[in-house]
Image (tube, rainbow, N blue to C red; front, side, top):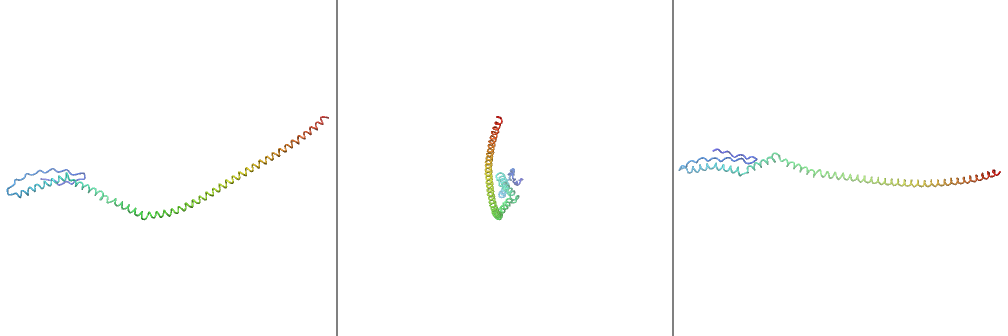
Length: 200
């Protein structure tokens, strides 16, 4: 009787079951061979029990398949990867620890010093701009006062000019009136003299 050994379970599932072996015809027992018969019957049943156990393990016991998958999983994620994620996490932890212990205090100190310097410069710039604004306001006020004074001077000059023109106009009118009166008197005298000559 030929029996194949147990097939190694693959990753996809259990192997197909082997066919049951055919039982051999039992020899006729002899009267003095009871003990030998019991031994030979046990020897014949032992392969059958073994085959039944293999069939049971192939059909109903999935532990080998699961163990194969577990071994594949462990090999894939631990042996092949070589605990890469653990090393990456350890590197991140060391980087974060170094940043918290060394880099962050230096950054805070540098930021504090630089911000104080920047604050001082900003205050100085603010004071300078405030002074420039005050100076510009004063200059604008002076310029406005100057424009106002120039306007008042121009108005006063124009008024004086107009008064002077009016006075001159009055003088010219007076002179013209006097000249007209003189001319009237002269013409009236000339008419009187002409009238004397005409009467002759």
